[in-house]
Length: 263
Image (cartoon, rainbow, N blue to C red; front, side, top):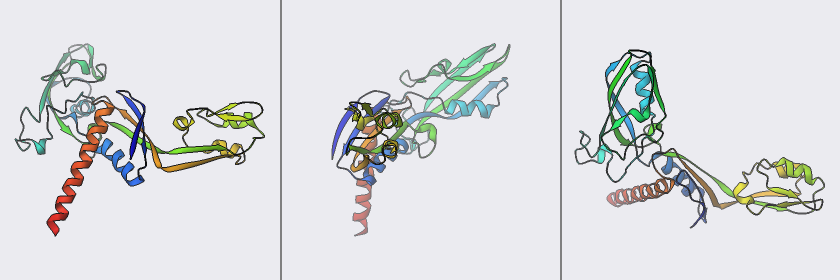
């Protein structure tokens, strides 16, 4: 296998995975979404809530607040030395106190760890009218997306490498160029030409093939994959990919040990 980066960004990354298989590509995709741990609020203890929103509604909103995550400082509860009973290594306390009239934003949540704070400070928690109060203590833990979507670090998807060929001169270049939603073609001398980065743009919709009456042929290289990773804000895209690979490696080692135990 080989990996080529198309663009590197903290929030969105695109890379090409070459000479791989569909099962491996899908395993990597699922690991990125479901197995990479992030920090999220798991429980909320209310001290005061005279707002118009029920406790359950506010608790749900807090659970969906995206928290920046420090994977080096925390462990999953079931893997922690305290066996999940609760310690500074696997749990984090957050405090929220507010009095109306005002709109309560996520930036008002006080965290005991300055590294774990809301990624989007202006996320609305609730609105308080005059003399209404909200006071609570929340507990955040590491978790994974297969348990609950609030722990998912982002979205990941892939597509096969597109192969687009213009077999001969097209009769309707303007119609073919307009048929592509990703602007893969440019008109030139009563014909069409592909743009240089067409493989990055193409989404394999086959609209150009239909419009050209199969003069333009679209196919797929099913050994090469264009991956796109978009982070929600807890972790950087590079960290998501790296951690997903570590998870896959650990699962393979665990499976190998169990197979050896059978023999």
